[in-house]
Every structure is written in structure tokens, then in C-alpha cells.
Amino acid sequence: MAVAGMPEHFEGLPENVVVSRLDELGSWCRKNSLWPMPFATACCGIELMATGASRHDLARFGAEVFRFSPRQCDLMIVAGRVVMKMLPVLQRIWQQMPEPKWCISMGACASTGGVFDTYSVVQGIDRFVPVDMYVPGCPPRPEQLIQAIIDLQDKIQAEGTLNGREFLSAQQQMTKRALVELPILGQGFSQP
Amino acid sequence: MTDQQTTDEQATGTAEQKVFEQIATQFPGLAESEFRGQTRVVVSRDELLTLMQALRDEYSFDMLVDVTCVDYLNYRGAEDRFHVVYQLAGTDSGLRLTVCLPLNEPDLNAPSMTALWSGANWMEREVWDMFGIRFEGHPDLRRILLPDAFEAHPLRKDYPLQGRGERHNFEVLRRGEG
Ligand code: SF4
Image 1 (cartoon, chains in turn cyan, yellow):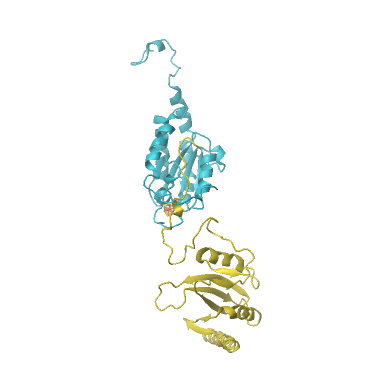
Image 2 (image 1 turned 60 degrees about the vertical axis):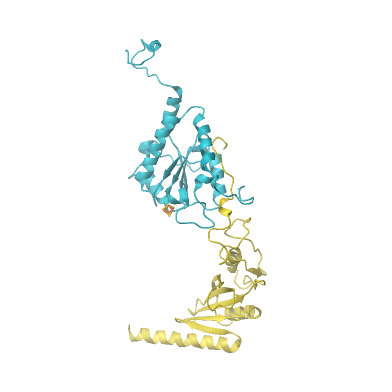
């Protein structure tokens, strides 16, 4: 059947054949089977659990398989404040997750440190690991987290490529965003 | 309140006073004070171990509830920089007692209570971690909460609330590197 805008060499294909780009097909598979890594360190973790439980049912969006091994995950949800003793652990878990992977920073604490402007609390995990989605709130309601996952799915569908080219441009953005204005004092604490 | 309860309370009240009077006669150097029914004694470092030993063995304060510390820097009317605070309780008698040990820089050493109560082990490690008080005779005086590489004692009043940059001291992970 002739469809407007269809390239000429697709003429004559049977009706049950769908034509797409490989990147788009890959992104479509990826976005609908996100396996979250629950990095829940504080009160936001309770809302994260509620999101996965029956009332809000994250399974409707293909993201219900919470895995406690980073090797099996591709979406890290950081829910709660991260202290300086925990950050090397978080980074190590992030590194252990196979590509492609994404990160949601859930709640005021994970995104900015929240009210905990003290010596031990990291003021936003995006200073040290890449973050794709920020969820505001203290704590965010499960609907907000679901919205973040839907938005992330849209982002994956829109920008995703099979060989991960989008991550390279994200790396440039990250360089811009991260430690430009932050002092880095001394050495140490970086190795878990 | 029934009559029975009132007499009970009076009875424990007098029993308490008796115990504290006995302690005061045995250790005349103690500065004793009371606030809202709670007794506190301030003891010097040399006397601390004998006092604690006697409290445990003779006055049946068999439980060391807590070891903590207060930094009195810039506190109005304070004479000493630190007070190491020991909370004692008698599980049979129901008595409670607070023992304070004043310490001043540069000599921040206190005798360890681990020989009397092994439960003092972690509590003293926490005081070391947060205030930098050294406990002599402690079997394993390491930091307990903060990372080993941490260099300050953050609950001291002269340590800035937002730290000295320790929370920014990490390597930055970027996309495509992990
Ligand atoms: S953002 Fe609020 S709810 Fe979430 S971890 Fe911080 S304090 Fe807790």
C-alpha cells in the first residue's frame, strides 16, 4: 500500500511489514524494559517502594524488575541523601552497571543535598555521576517518579542510538555542568 | 496519684539520696550537682577509674548506658573545653548517674572504660571520631563512622558546619567511561 512520504523502493511490501530505523527499534526495546537499580538510602526510598508496589505498579511501564545486582540493571534510581562515605559505593555500583545505562536522581537530597548542607552530605550526586532525570519533591510522590520514568522513556526513544552516540554528547554537557565552579581540595576519598 | 505510689516515690527518693551521700563521703573531691532530679558528678582524670570501679562494684551501677562528649567552646560561663560524659544506670536499683570528666587542650586523653564495660568500646570510638578525645588503654581506637582518611573531628565547635571541602573530594564519572 502506498503511504505518503514512503521511499519508492518500499513500494509493494506486504501490509504486515513494518519499516523502521534500527536505532529506533533498539531504543523502543530498551525503553520498555528498564530494569531499575534501587539505590535507596533514605526516606525517598519508601516512596520508591510504593512506586513499585501494587497501587502505583511500575510494571505498567516495563520497569518493575528491581534488581539488586548492578550487573543486571540499566537504570539507577538514587532515592535519598548520599553521604561522602556512600558516594564511592554509588560510583562503584554505577560503574558495574553495563551500558547503556541511565540515572534518575529522586528527591531534593539526591539532586541538591536538600536541607542537609553539612560536611558529610554530597550536595547533589550529579556532581560526580551523570544524571538523566531529576525528580523534585521531598519526597516526590510515586506519580512524580512514574512521570520521570515516562519522560526518560521519551528521551531514550528520541535520542537513543544503538551504539550510544547520545552518551558522547551528554558527556560534553556533563563537563559543562559538573565541577566547573566547584573547588576540588586535595586528594583522597575517591577509591572505594 | 494513689497513696501507695507516693510512698514508693518517697522511698526511692531517700534510697537514692543515701547512695549519693555514701559516694560523696567516699570520694570527697567530687563536685556534685542536681538538675530536675538527675544527679551529676564532675570528677578529675586521676580519680575517674577508681570512681567508676567503685560505682560498678560497690554501688551496683552495672550498666554503662552511654559515653559521649560536649564541646564547651564559647559557651558562656564554661571553664573547660570538653566534658566527656558517662551515663550510668543500675539495672537492679533503677538509679541513674551522670559522670563528667573535664578535659582541656592540648592533653585530650581519658582512661578507657573498656576494662570495666566492654560495651564502652564502640562508644569511645565514636567520641574519638567526632571529638578527637584519645582513650588510653582502648584496644582498637579507630574511627567508627567517618572514612579512615578523614582528617578532622567534625563535632567540635570550631569545625565549620559545611566542612572543609571533604564532600567535594571525589573523582567525577562521566558518560562512556564506566
Ligand atoms: S528529599 Fe526529603 S524524603 Fe527524600 S531523602 Fe531527602 S529528606 Fe528524605
